[in-house]
Image (cartoon, rainbow, N blue to C red; front, side, top):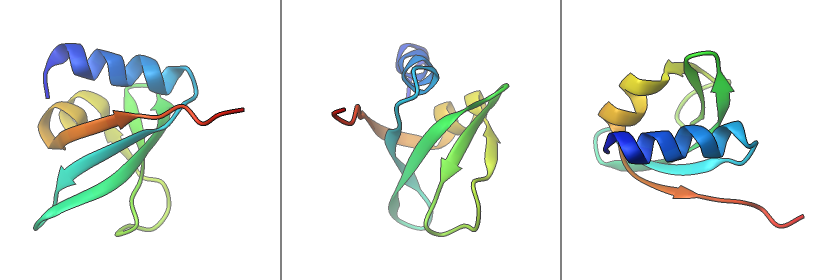
Length: 74
């Protein structure tokens, strides 16, 4: 993930729309990034309880391998 893509993800989340993101756990795993909370990204992960917050730059630049910016239709 590069800085330009991370900026696009941050702005997309700030607009209120989710991001489908592929991360590596033991294999590849899809999660949703659902929003921004200060300097953290809110993560919806079927492998974890609740909606944990992760440091945005560390998580997006270090863990996200691919992302789909989604905008649900009204």
